[in-house]
Structure formats: structure tokens, C-alpha cells
Figure 1: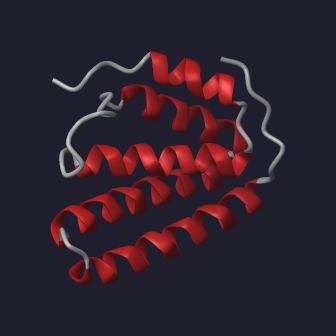
Figure 2: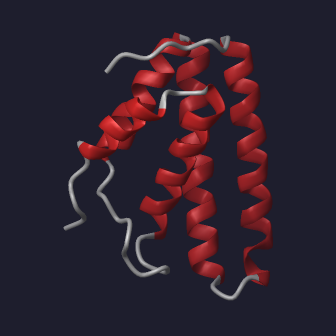
Amino acid sequence: MEYKVTLSTEEIVRGLKHYRRIAKQDVLRAPETPNPDIFRQHAEARREIYAKLAEVAEAEGPDAVVSQALALYQELPFVTGTAEDAHPEIKGQENALENFFLMIGLDPKVRREARKARKPVQ
């Protein structure tokens, strides 16, 4: 898959830190939600992805972090259409990666190609 990264490492890391803070706020407010455990698991999964991507960005740069994000996205089982409270970790990871793709302005065609490579949940 071909893609072009226009953001610097610093911009990517700053954006990921912002997303990570939002996920942290969601973890803290989870007890106030109708499904606290599901909400917390989803938020924690997002936080983990943002932290992992920030590490890669700082160590290896923009192209490497996009490659890593696409690889992680392709490895995720496809869970769209499952019950709302099913697979919160996978859905959180998927949400985080899709937020990252939006943040960097990844061509939707590239994301669709990566999405097609995903296998259904077992």
C-alpha cells in the first residue's frame, strides 16, 4: 500500500498525546457510564494503541509509525456488526487506529485496502 505522510514526528506525537489524554479522561469517567467495564476496556485499549504508536513515531519516524499502524489494523479481527458490548478491546484498538488515520490524513482508499485484509472474529 502506498501512502504519503505529511506530518512531522513532532506533530504526530503531539496528536497522539492529545488522543491519549482523551482516552485517559474516558477511563476516569467510565464508572459514570451504563456499562463501566466495557467503556473502561475500550478506553484503555485506545490508550495502549496511542502509546505504542507514539513510541514508534519517536524511535523510527512518521513512515514507520504509519506502517506499524496499518499492520496493527490488518491484524485486528473484523468485529463490525457484533453486539455493542462485544469485543471492547478490539473495538477500542480499531477506533484508535482509525482516529490515527484521520489525524494523519491517510487516504481513505489505503484504509479500505487494509480493512479488506482483516479476517472475521473467530
